[in-house]
Amino acid sequence: MSTQVKDKEAFQRLRFLYQAAHCVLAQNPENQELARFYCHTQRSISRRLILRQDPSVKRTICKFCSSLLVPGVSSTVRQRKRRVQRWTVVRCLACGQSKRFFSEPHYKLWSEQPEALLENQPRAEQNPTQHLEGGGKTRFPQPPQMTLVKLNRFGT
Image (cartoon, rainbow, N blue to C red):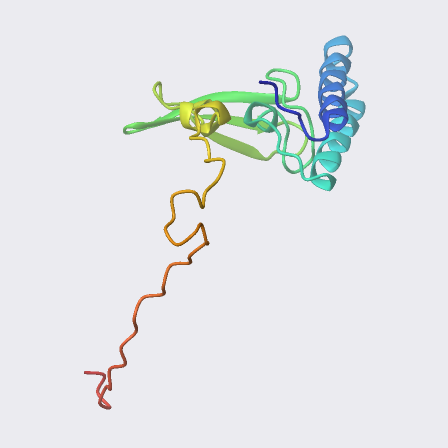
């Protein structure tokens, strides 16, 4: 069963802009302004159409200046460890802002977990009123009973 993707053309445009930004930086690392323009355009389209981007894409774009974060070209990547926690620090060379990502070996993003996949979600029944008594009428749950308690001036 195939599902229809809403705004398929918009997702294709977002993918094209992301790939174009990568190609521009791969051909000429000095041309960061054009890559930044592509990433900024991609971000504005996704905001305007309210489309969610994959976390792997969001991690490679600077939130502040919309630069594409390519290690060694437009960003630096460092591993940090303090006591038990470990994380990766990505610093943008254009604006100086840094991002921290936990780098635990067993950590998975929500989008990578099996519960996040739509295929693993329980299916809704075709006729939700089928199991109700009373001729299939929809019944709403009653709100809990509220009791009033009179408090004295000390709050007890």
